[in-house]
Amino acid sequence: MKQNKRRHADAMRKASRLAPPEEQESNHLPPPTTTVSGAKGNGKNAIVVDTGALKLPETFLDEDREDAAWSHPAPVVIVILCVLLSFIAFITWLIASMPPAK
Image 1 (cartoon, rainbow, N blue to C red):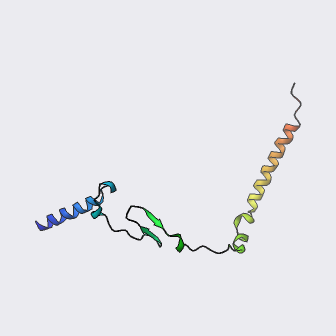
Image 2: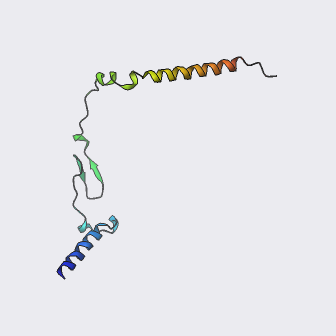
Image 3: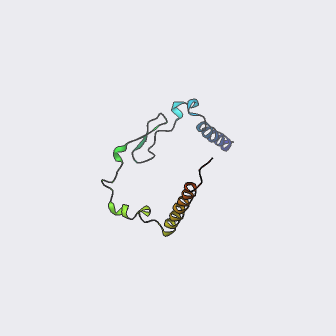
C-alpha cells in the first residue's frame, strides 16, 4: 500500500512538471540553473547570456586565409568555368550574327 502511494505521489510530481508555465505555481518551479558558462536563468523562463565571458580572437591570422579553399580552386572548377564562358560567348556570337528582323 505504501508503495502505491509513493508511486502515485511520484507520478503526480512528474505530471505537475508537464503543466504549461502559466498553470504552474511559483513554489513548484525548479530553481534557476546555469546552463552555459555565463548563462543564468532569471526565474522568468528566459536565459540571459553574459557576453563578458566570451573570448574572441584579437586578430584573424593571415595564414588561415591563405589556406582557404576558395583561394585555390580545383582544376575541375576551372575547366567547368571555361566551358561555361565558352558557351556564353558562342550564344552571344550566334545572336550577334543573326540577320536583322523584317
